[in-house]
Image (cartoon, rainbow, N blue to C red; front, side, top):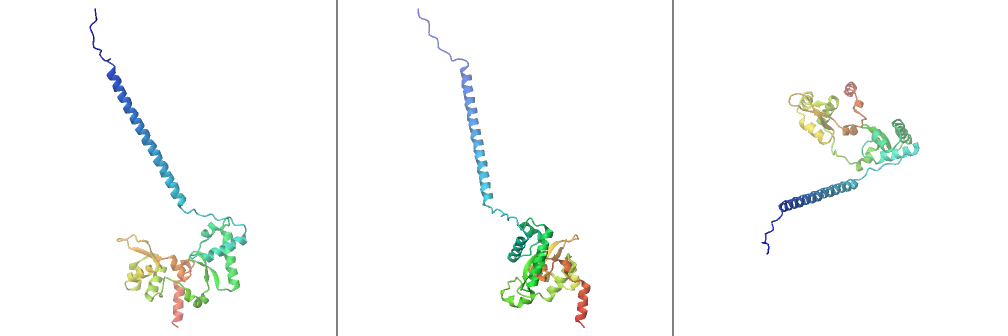
Length: 248
């Protein structure tokens, strides 16, 4: 006698198995995506670092100067520096190139070189101006140098400009209203003209209502008049004496 056929039911744990497989597949996909994202991030960071390194290497590296062997070589280098520079060099700037010479020894070399140029009686001299040192032609040869002179200032300073410049030089820092009060006229145009030729600049603002600009002289002012510093300006008393003598 044959047994009746019975339909096979799927095991109760089969749906659970399928769900587990789906979850496992999702977790695997997420892990792969996360791994791919982190790998891309690492690659991007590496690329950024390579770009930064390439950019850094493309910048001109500061060239280190060799150490100076002796005083004779130091003086020769000093002479070269003063010859090629277009701006006065301070002792600090010179020392950064001529090392390991200390400041006292370097100053002594400058004085020695100055004396050598003075003793030979040539057309060049070493001058101290605007807080530094520079090679320059001697003033009594200026007429022969005129055809080769290149200056921003094509014309001389007017009486008004000299008057205003003198007030600012001796009273700095000073506001325009104070300059006007001394001169008795409006000085805004004259001060602007002095700023254009870089003899005067704004050095701050006065702590009063309106905070007006304070004016002072520039480094070019010292160079223009051949001064080491503002302390070399002649005193008011000496100027008054000169004026009285000139008036006879």
